[in-house]
Image: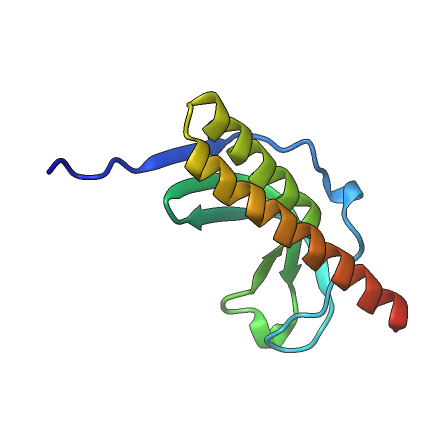
Amino acid sequence: MAPIETITITIGRLRTTLEDIPGGIECVVCGKPTVKAFVPYQFEGDVVVRVLQTPGYRCTSPTCAEDPPEYVSHEALLEIFTVARDEMLERGLTLEAEKFKRRIEFQKRAQEESRRLEGDN
């Protein structure tokens, strides 16, 4: 049996910008506010997706200074998963495309829930 080939997608640049994402979020490590920043992103599953500059957030507090946590925005994840789904469809990989479709649906629900919670505060 031949080894399973890893499918890798490298996305050079997203259309989503720092201006497109909401203000900073709270760092889950220290609880301090984060700042908007471009952060690297890599998703590994049946398909590996890499993006070098993803709109997101970085903690700048002294508590996290040694290894600052980085977070990817909902908006960027939606775009990343959409690009990956489209790439899978172009390659005729419908099963993998369906998995990314489910990730897109999940991410939309997560984004809606996040916005709802922000509105409650």
